[in-house]
Image 1 (spheres, rainbow, N blue to C red):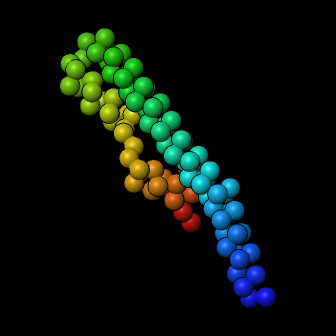
Image 2 (image 1 turned 45 degrees about the vertical axis):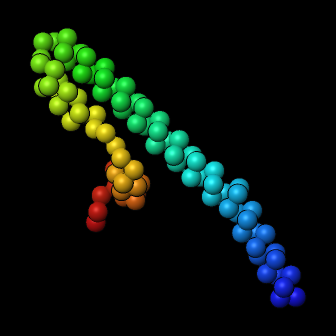
Image 3 (image 1 turned 60 degrees about the vertical axis):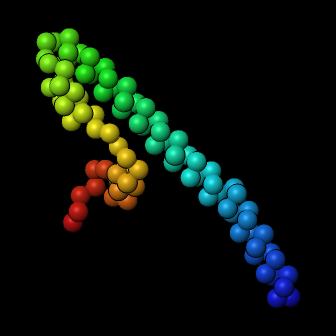
Length: 90
């Protein structure tokens, strides 16, 4: 009975890994890359609009970087670990 139970547990672990954990990780990676794509596109548009308004390129780049920052993986995991965005500490 112990050997069969062990095989069932290993099979359950493989199923959980393949059908739950891997798609979740892939979904989080897709969200991360999509977020970076959107931020990068908005940053370029904003920089172009500021340059069109007459600001120097260096200043417009700094302002655009401040408003639409680049997000790295470590920052992404920090944001995910905080819980909901509007939640206050009590």
